[in-house]
Length: 283
Image (cartoon, rainbow, N blue to C red; front, side, top):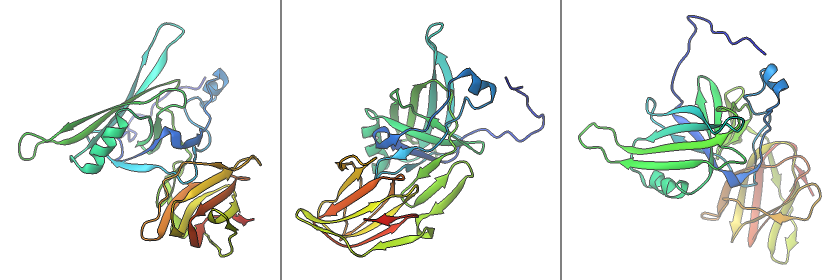
């Protein structure tokens, strides 16, 4: 087992970042792994995820602003001897009773989300594949000029690991955050692949492509409901949930596919499809 030491006089900031990332748990297709074996503990690998959160196509993480000095993460243990689990907590504070945060509170109170929160230069996960996160929103108008107001989110989730570290990718609407290097790449800076020839099908127009091992953004021009189907490991195409909709004839959304995934995207009409993506293959 490793020594647990501390360098006196070192910089050791408290608090969390003012931007927190969150996603509905059912948007996650595959979780990164985390080792609970004693050997992992001996080598210092016990408390962090290995790999990326793989998302459903057309899904992405969202940002949540939290006033600094009002938010934090913490954890404690509960349960009987030989059956104890950790309960990870987070507190977020949004400074206004805005429509979007009240709408989120309405859904989150009975939903299940995963949160990625930055503290002291690292990213931590509140949420678990096997346990449901409980979110309790509370609102306050403030009682005098200059007094605190807004919406507070109290989050807790059972886990096997105290606030595990995450070093993978966070796919957002405008780019990808690498949590290990703390760097952000905008989709505009990625390679652009234009698909000009797409097959005509009875139920409408569609494009098909085979994905490489990266995330990206898709820009679609057309009309009608958008249907996204994915074939994983050669299995029959299956429709997947997504948040892509046309607005004034244009739809733009990030996605996350993996090597070997075959994707079919259909709508009533498609006039142009542009994909910012590496290693794209058409078929």
